[in-house]
Each structure stands twice: as C-alpha cells, then as structure tokens.
Length: 160
Image 1 (cartoon, rainbow, N blue to C red):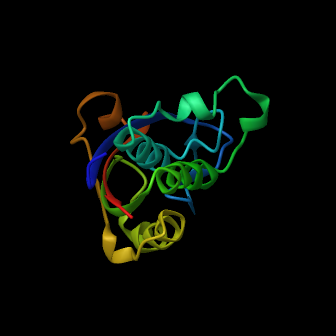
Image 2: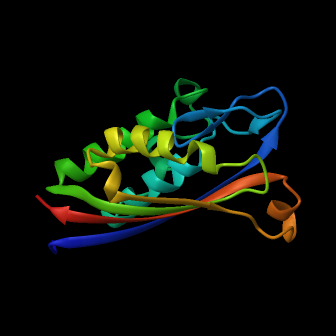
C-alpha cells in the first residue's frame, strides 16, 4: 500500500419534523432535523465515507445498514470512530481533511469551531488538521429551497 491515500465522501439528508439537527457531532438549534436511520449527521457520514473510501472499503451503509435495528438513532460519531479504527488497523492515520457543508439554513458559521473540536477528537487529529466551511446552494435546486443539507469531505490518510 502507498504512503498516502485520499478519500472522497458525500452525503445528503432531507429535513424532517420532530428530529434534532446534528452536524459534525454538534446539536444545532433549528425547527427541523435531518431524516435518517441514525442521527442523520450528513457531515460526519461524508467524512466517515471519505476515510473508508481512502482505504478502498465499502461505504458506511455496508458497516451500518439502515435496515439494522441496532443502528436506529445511532450517534454518527460512533460511525466515524469505526472508520478511523479501520484506518489504524490497516496501518494508516488521518493526516488532514477538508469538509464543505451545503445548507441554506440554519446559519452554520457559529457552530464550526464546536464541530471541529468534536471531529478532531474522533479523527485523532488537532483541529488545525480540519478544514471546515459552510456555503449555500444559492437558492438553486432542492438544497437551495432548504429541503435538506449535504456535505462533501476529502481526507488524506498517512502510513503510520
């Protein structure tokens, strides 16, 4: 295996009434949460998929199927920790990552530092190794109409 491996992850979830909004492991005040079998943290799902993809492994649906009752309401940070553990088991550690969150609402910027702290702990890196930004979809498409939130993540793994 090479010294460096790069992975790309993407996830999207629709808004749903009666759910908490969790992004990057942080609960964000909002009138709706995201729909999903787990806590539906699309940012963390994209990041975990990026780690797994860098390793050439299947996506999180393989490890945590949405028809498995044990995964119902699962904390997505557990999914991320599992992906990082898979990397360590194969002789890699996270070098750095870059994440883009796409959301018309709510405002994400006030929560970015808290998200970075949670993610850094579970990625086993310093917060300076995490690029995290939020943008809108400029009112274009379903994301632009605030029907959900999406995330793109890229991760660099380094040989230990």
